[in-house]
Image (cartoon, rainbow, N blue to C red):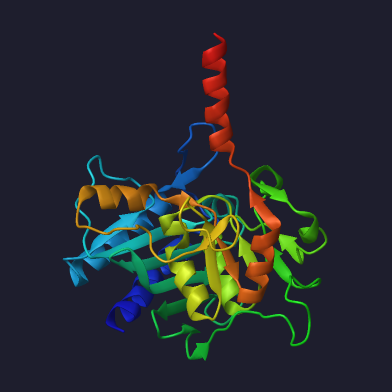
Length: 307
């Protein structure tokens, strides 16, 4: 309870900072050097504020953020705060008010507390989603629940109900015949944690993200599961439970307090499929992940043999 409450304090403070700079003058750089993947001085200020707050309150905890990774990773602490100072920076830079500030607290790699701040058309101009393991997902005193298919209807995405998919959907997935016409009403938002929060709130019936990092999904995963949903990720060779998919449980398979654990959590990147259980199982059975990395490796080997 203490960690969850303080996570709410942290995102409220960072959200106030970020929203106060919205649509104003800011320094913008490109991480890729080509104009894509922007980072601003607001991102850095937001993360610095969160790092400072967590360090004062929980000096034995670690903060792992999106911006300005250290040259040498520290050994992993049992508690790791995965923070995203602005998820949806491209939207933010362009004056589009669809973004989020998020904190997902991991205990030995498992999400146990979460808080997400988003702009919202209510008094005060924002809402804060929060959850702790076993305690439900909430906005204030309103308990959240995922949007489930009506009783008696086939458990698949419903037309007229919103869902989110990545813009690169057809590059990333082979769409099986059963999925065609069964996406619901798909949208693309540009913020993974925003989408996962909307699943928990019951706005989206499911969310399928692009390849996102730990700080993009840590808070959202807990919000969804505590709101009665499930979260699937692409399966490894030994953990398939639904074709190409497996149930998310932890950011590392074996946790230890080493630099390598910190590196694995920072480097973790993948697709997330989240929503009401019935809908998620349907989608998982009809989308096959394209293994482009494996195909590229095979192509390189073939080319080497031909030389």
